[in-house]
Image (tube, rainbow, N blue to C red):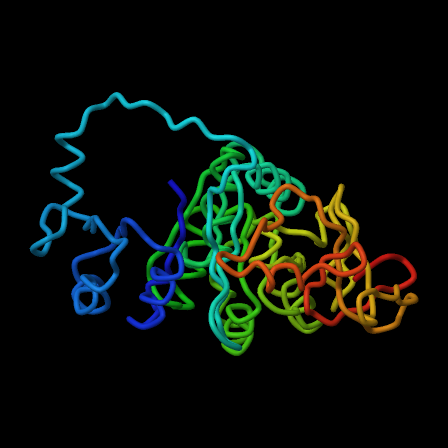
Length: 330
């Protein structure tokens, strides 16, 4: 079985496109989402054989998971998989065209485990909250897989952004590691420091951010409100895991996403035809990685030529512009 998360906020067309590209055989959803976003075109997806509905009741033609699981045997044969066997398909958002299905293999879990441990301070028993939706790549990789294999205590919240609820969760659940996004941080900043004043964040030991560049003001604000900075890091759907990070052992340079994790070689390059030129410190260019890490995508589903274009001159080209200073901070 190959798993692909679907963001519940996607519209019917976005969900259908991903299921068509991925040739989905089964989908797990709720009755409400099924009726609003899938039922109208379900029969037009020839590969789709099974619709599993969370709960005890299901619309006609679907299977209710509650009674089905109650009747299922508690014994089953675990599928025999190999490190290079496909495990996950993460679709890009498709903001600049047709979404791409990045195929990741079972060995990707090695990167999920290591990055969670060294970039996010995930150790057994620690209380952890990743605010990303589980239907997005961040929410799957570092909201489910990484915390599970690192054996932390996880919090998953299904509510929309609510400032008091967010601060209450941090306080009441005694969150020790918090992984969030610049968008959420900016929303908290707009509410002012006063909104956070009534809450106790004394057990919160590490805060990290990803999704887009974290501005310097957000790092400074984290220090003022929580007594510690947000540690920015960088990765993509295609990389499958955190590649560059401000780890707990580093002094955060506001505006920097940090340094490559152990085993990751990163550089700044300028594309020149079928080759690249490596840029000097302080020079802006394209962020690139040497291929070979465990969670690197192995293909774009059904798009071999598009995949090959990502690799030039011995580098994976990310498409993101960046620079590296003389001390190695990106």
